[in-house]
Length: 142
Image 1 (cartoon, rainbow, N blue to C red):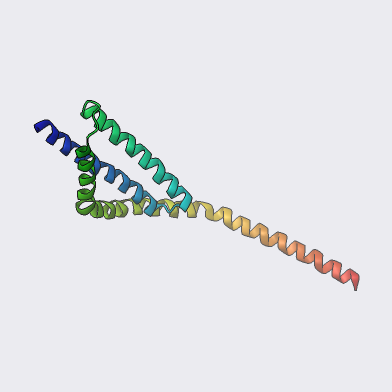
Image 2 (cartoon, one colour):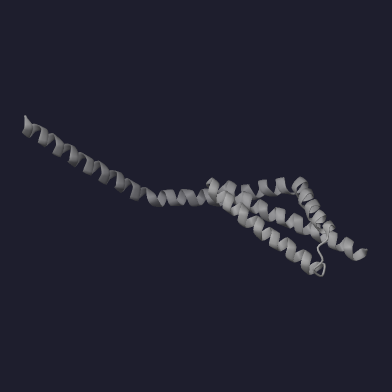
């Protein structure tokens, strides 16, 4: 009986840890937006890995016997973590990671400014050359 209770609490901890790992993925998506197909691929990959982790833990911890109370413990840990820790964890992590991402975007923008400026200059210059060529052709026709 004591061993099963310990396994139940371990399964609850695994469920909570899996949710926190998923929350890290959610934070990554909030800080750096993704397209829908990439989000779907990340979700599929995460839940496949989570399933392997869960089954490996159950298999190793319970001598290969799969019991329903372990799945219930994982689900309970997931739900408790979702209600208690997850919202605060996500909001704090988003605030922590937004600043470095903002600095990176600013730095890249400043580094690319001369390149963009030269590109605009070259485009304007070639555009003006083409316009002059068109004007010359029209003058010749008259």
